[in-house]
Image 1 (cartoon, one colour):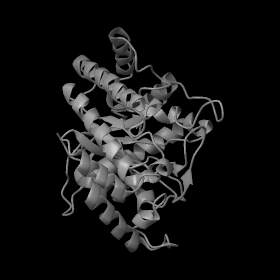
Image 2 (cartoon, one colour):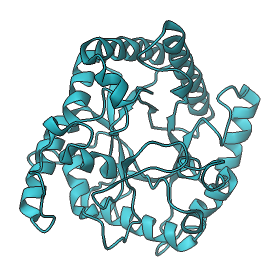
Image 3 (cartoon, rainbow, N blue to C red):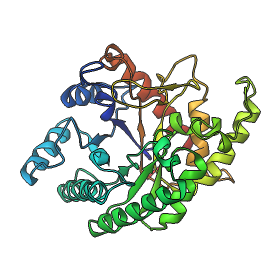
Image 4 (cartoon, rainbow, N blue to C red):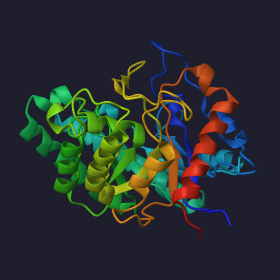
Length: 341
């Protein structure tokens, strides 16, 4: 009998992230839904989508508009899981106005999340946040800026708790205070809230092992030979043993060991296609470092996993084969590291 958990989701924000006037056009939400719903591998399909509350949709939407959006997704036989709060007009470190805006965007995202749960289309998932600050700005005053990020995240957690929501901090090298595995761990431990977790993306967290944006936190040796699989696996164990206990949201992804940015998005871990021959990860095997504990037992810490593939060219995004390959990879992850419920 096939495993039916974790549920398999596709991210909608790759249609938005890295797009825009100085890049390629946004891939519309409806197109992303259609491509997701059409993916099929031996009769297995995506179970849902994770969504971004920017560009594709207005975080200020009314309750009636929330219902219409939920109905649209439901017509494709998809659930909604995790959501990205649009906190970038604010910042977790900076002026009071910036931090107040950050908190307000978290509140609005949590309201939408709560309504979607009440409708019944969102049975699991978190609200994703980042610091909305660059590593360079963070480096100008690491102690003071880290203190501000922690305090802002604590306030955000308190707001989220009022809505019964969990927050997850995105592990990505372009966000200050989250730009290395050690700064991320310090942030999580310092926030110290039961509804504060970590969102691991395999493409981004691979860059943690390489010390991008914070060389002193490198795990892999300089000039690492990617043919040295044993050393890479040791580095992945070090990384995941530290951050796995915090992980409440997980993105399956591939990376070729480089950084990339497009549109207005800063350089971060490059997302590669599922079958990219230049990918440095054994995606199915290496997902197990996040989905299983140090003794190899399944953690079952989250009920769905998501594919994240931002900043792909639009001709890739609008090819059905792209999504079939992604779905096939996720099915393999679930077969190896999933469970039945």
